[in-house]
Amino acid sequence: ALLCATPAGAQQRAEGWQFEMTPYIWFSGISGDVSLPGGTNESFGADFGDIFDTLKFSAMGVFEARRDRFSLVFDLFYVNLQQGFNSPNSIAVSGGDVRSRTTEISAIGLYRAVETPSVFFDVGGGLRAWWIDTEIEANAGRLAGRSASSTTNLVNGVLAARLGARLTDRTALT
Image 1 (cartoon, rainbow, N blue to C red):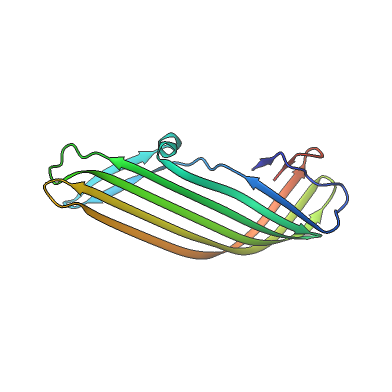
Image 2: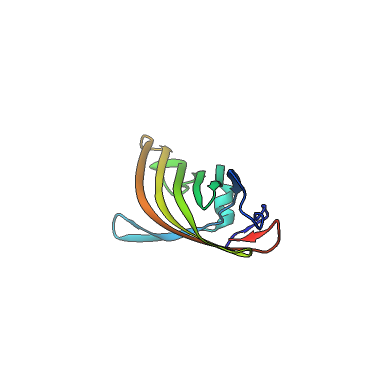
C-alpha cells in the first residue's frame, strides 16, 4: 500500500482533465547462488544498503491523467548500478567492474467502477516493458582483459485493480 500526501479529490467529480505525479522509492535486495565451472557453487547477497552504495542514478515515478471515470497511468522505473570488484586471489585478472541498468515502463488504462465519498475502485489493463542490461569487465592481469554483456527485453500484459480510501481531503491510501 502506498500512502500519498497528494490531494485525494473533492467529494464531487471535477470537470475536465486532472493530472497527478507521484515519485516513489523502491527498497530492494538480491540474493542467490552461482554455479561455477568445475561444479563449484557460490552464494551471493546484497541488501538495500549494499545496492544503494552502488547506485549511480535512479528515477521512479507514476504519472496519471484522469478525466471523468477514465485514467491513463504511466509508471517509470530506472536504476543504474555500478560496482567495482577486486580479485586478490587471481593472477589471471586484476579486478574489474560490473554495471546493471534496468528500465521499466508501464502504460495502464483504468475505469473507475466504484466511487463513493470515501472509497474508490478502479479496474483496467495495459502493457509493461522491461529493458535489462548487464555488463562485466575484468581488468588485465596475466590474461588480457575481458568483458561480457547480456541484454534482456520483454513486454507483458497487465491486468490492474486499484482500491483507494480517502482519509482526509488531502490524503488517500491506495
